[in-house]
Image (cartoon, rainbow, N blue to C red; front, side):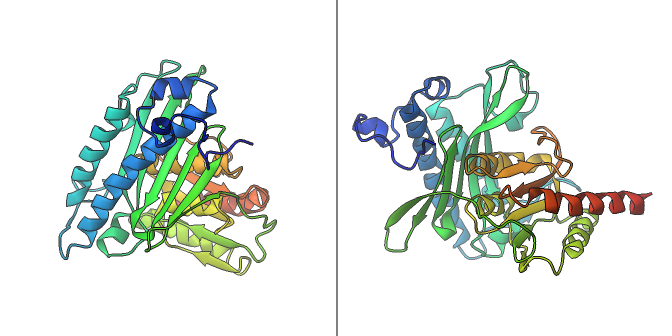
Length: 319
């Protein structure tokens, strides 16, 4: 398998550094060097904007939570500023066919859309925790008018951690030390075969009924894994399945506003040869709410049984 970990040294230096890459050409061509360069160019946007968000987080009492209406996503004052920066900088690379989050996307085969999350992990961010991310993804419409993410960047500025992946090019993790050193590593999931002794992570929303289902589902497998984690956000948890930190991740209710973050992380999981799907095995719907399961691949079937049983019990309770 090819891997984006090292751009080809024979390329011109401007392309090796990710400058001036033709995005449409990179996504259309079989030239892997162009796609790698595009991925790294997008990563510089995430790095720049993410570091700006980190400085804002470190400013005492500088951010306030807001919710535009009941049932909507929680955001912060800084989210709008981050999104404005992200949109401007990725558009400068290539406007593509617009932004998926604007709605009403044209599903003409071959169309491509930016999908951006200015802040995944709002509560963590507001509580001065390090686990939050900036994510950038590109979604593509295939010949069957189905939408798939084909490129993803997930950046956790407070952790000095970035994940990059592009279709057919593998996935890498880039770690930055406090001293400024950079280490690039191929992303490989764990080889844990059963829930016994595994490390599982789950997510849950701030809506009561959804949280109860997540907790009931976690309780149904309690005693099998060596540990069950709840840290968040979804994008980072999914990437940690891809790199073997966790063996699986599940969440019963990811909302439409979670799509950008999940889309970026999905490319990382897929390119690492992990699995990511809905609890019933169906594909993720990139324009609606979803439950989601990501695994290292080998323990997928075992955990699926528990998730489906939990979903059935929840339906019975609702009735």
